[in-house]
Every structure is written in structure tokens, then in C-alpha cells.
Length: 180
Image 1: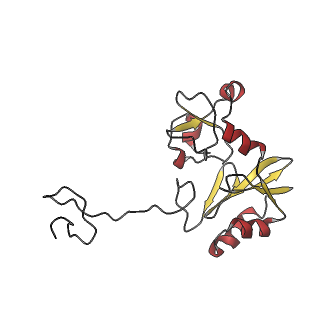
Image 2 (image 1 turned 180 degrees about the horizontal axis):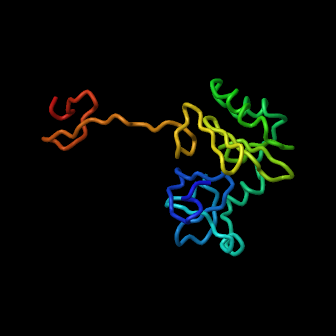
Image 3 (image 1 turned 90 degrees about the vertical axis):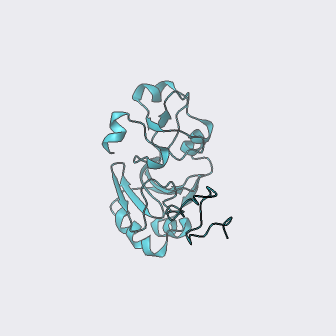
């Protein structure tokens, strides 16, 4: 886990670097969440030990953590195929997970990752563009984008200039819809 997680500094949920089942909270929030929770709309930090003992977990996250809607998978090769890891990353996932001891594999209800578990507890995770063989190690593949919840590349990096006469954004071709 990086220093941001241990110092209690707030970070956007999309930039969370911990494990998918870590409990986090927003400043002033009344419930704990997992980083992929759809309820999170502001920055998060790691929940303290006291907060984990005293604060309730949001309903969506509790279902996720309790395994409601989990899809269990028979082996790593089956998991990689059924989860839809791109062909270019399948061997990378297999190599990163090779040494992880586990007795079960599952996709949570959100279908946002696959977990490798031992004695009912997740030990390692992988997505379509990364593998996380332990809580402290993330292996990003060439198409991995840090901070993307789904690991996908961001959208509109190319943007047009603003038309000085009409104050609207021009397409990247440079022509203004109003001027033409």
C-alpha cells in the first residue's frame, strides 16, 4: 500500500491504490465503503481500526463483501476467460497469479475484478489490465491506466480551441460551427 493510504490523506476513489475490498470512508461520511462503491462521490481515505469497529458498512458494499451475487469459477484459466481479460493480457495474469495460494476464485456482484481466496478471504485480485498478487503489489499491464475504475483509457484527450467570437469549443478540425 502506498504512503497515501497509510497517512489518511484523502484521494479520489478512482485513484485508490489499495485492495478492492479495503474499507474506505469520505470525510464526514456516516458509512464505510469499498473503493468501487457507486455511492462514492467525493475523496476517500482508509478507514481507521476504530471506524471499522464502530461505523456501519453501506448496504451495497456489505452485499459485495458478503459475497451476494458472487460467481465462483473453477480455476484460473476459467476465470481469465469468463472475466474477459484481453488475449494480450491473459498470460500476464496467469504469470502474476501463479504463486498465489488459493482455494477459491470468484467475481463479485459488481463484476469489476476476480478474487483469489483462501479460507473465505480474498488474497489476490486481477482485472482486465492489471494483477494484484497481494495487497501491496499491483502489476499494471501495458494498457493499464492508473486510477481508472475499469482500467480503461480516458476519453477526449484531444480538444479543440474555443472560438474567440462565439465562445464555444471548436472541433479538433479547428472550424467553428457558428462561423462556418
